[in-house]
Length: 415
Image (cartoon, rainbow, N blue to C red; front, side, top):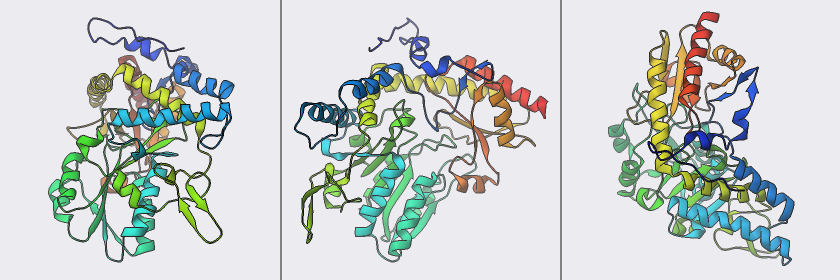
């Protein structure tokens, strides 16, 4: 059953009530109330999304799209409702521009292989940035090896901001794709993607945006951004794992060959030749993660009920509070100090390895991520082995931040 959001007179949102809708946050870890600050890796799921997934399994489960019986039709309707909700959520022009994938990584691989195989040739250039997640590096390396294309990298400064003059200088007639992250999962930097896209389009170059860390934190609008491709994952925005979205402009998707073959993506199959289904199904081979897709429709409704503008404001408030608290700790260094940041703080403690810090914090019930965060080139750029990372969601509290700061001081005392 859907819970209504109570309000208060100051912020018009009762954040305590929203937090109460996430059952996992009520538990204790190692005898301490859980402080969950690993939202950049995967956010938590509200009760109403869990209930919707359970209801599908209890009452609607069947394979989608090809069945004439009632359960199959019910499952198909629920599954396709998600496409409509995603279209509205990101303001895409056409419903068929919403392609179901298993996540951001799958979405990027789809574009790299499908678009790249057709359009890249030897000595063409693919432009990415120095702050990309491995998921927006490795697929381009693979297609570059297959086609003879060359990967070029937009550098960044010590604050973790892209050097936009260098970007403009790298664009040329050889550039056949720009693939850039909207928000860095490690640094929190919000990149100027509108400028990046406009500059590329002035030369007729398509742009893919990795939006995995942007869509959970802010309102994104495909018609305003004018991105050619935009990828994101359900599990980073309070949804289930194993489900993601690729937005692609209809004219580009129509021109691209299928990425995978199998059921549902075909029109007619003979041993001599196969023809393809229409968009969006041309790129959706085989039985999809149906229950996750059905749950994601409810996730979008949940986020819309709160309002992405409210979520962005809440997280910025918590980010500012956390930045102040952590900057006041002697021996702590924040990595990623862009003026335009999402709610991510990567940090180092002098002479203490990030993994050791994370282990001790976990003993206090505080969950942070440690390591290179699938951004080894960033670690090489800053000449560090890794960081501890606190990634904040709207359901976190200032008390969570206080616990983190106290935990960090305990780590320092421990070592």
